[in-house]
Amino acid sequence: MKKKIMIIDGYNVIHRIPELSKRLSNSLESAREGLISYCKKWRMTRRDISECYVVFDGDSSVLGARSQVARGIRVVCTKTKESADDRILNLIEQGHGTGEYVVVSDDNKVCQGSRRLDAKVISVSEFYGTLTTKRSWSRRYHETTRRPHFLRKRKKKSPKV
Image (cartoon, rainbow, N blue to C red):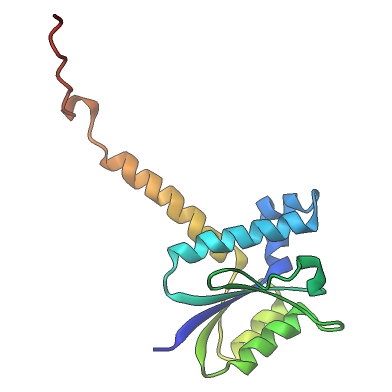
């Protein structure tokens, strides 16, 4: 069985998700941390994804020495004069045949190039909706399966002495 590898177009996702794009007014680092935090939560719900790469444009010195922020999640920064789009496509080409790739982006160049390399592409809204929808579904499920108050067993009061 081939392992599933997810590649996320970092800044593309940040600009498409309102909660993360609001963080840009604070700092770029805050928005990146928000995306990485979301990826950690997302990966915990998806056991079928073995590795997750979050690709950002820019020098890795802004992120410090940590390329792996959590188990199975790696942050990749582009080299000088290399775009995140090109780096994503290079990651798929280098690993072609070793795994099944899933790319998260709304960028046309990334989506078309990934499909040409036989990677599955999902939109940012589909990626973001998986965790938020699952959470709301879970809440609704538990609310509807809770027993009505008149059917619940009451605690017996101990007699006053």
